[in-house]
Structures are given as structure tokens and as C-alpha cells.
Amino acid sequence: MASFKVRVVNEDDKAIENARVRLEFTGLTRGMSGEQHTDADGIAHFDGYEEGPINIYLNGSNYGGSYYENGEQVSVWV
Image 1 (cartoon, helix red, strand yellow):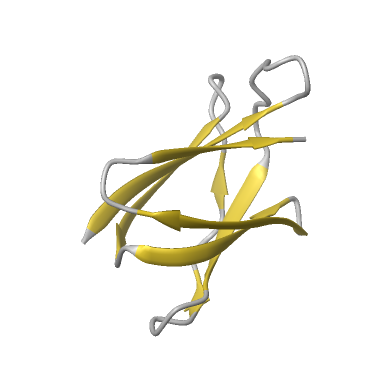
Image 2 (cartoon, rainbow, N blue to C red):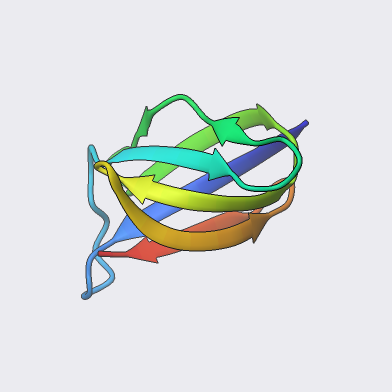
């Protein structure tokens, strides 16, 4: 199982705290993750999922796709 981080920042690269983040798994393991909230560094942690393609949702809106592997971090600019 993989551990994965999503970092949410604004256009000035400043962390956004308390954003709601969910992942939609688009590969063979389709489904949605539980909702996580970003911390003071703008990071939401996801653990125990299979590696693969995802769509990232922030506060209910789709912010695009990515592919994640164990230990990676993806940044999302809002």
C-alpha cells in the first residue's frame, strides 16, 4: 500500500490550510478516498491506497489528474 501527499498552494506558492481534498481512483481500483484536510503547510496525507492514476478534488471541484507512487507529493495550485 502507498502513502501519498497532496500539497495545495495559491498562485504565490503559499500553503492553503484546511482545504478539503479527495482522490478519485481512475484505474482498476476505481472509487473515492475519504476526505482529508490540509494542514498549516497545505498538505493532506493519504495512506493505504494502491499506486495509480487519480483525479484530485479540492472543496468539491476537480483539479485534474495525476499518477501517484508511494512516497510522492503532488502540488495543486488554486
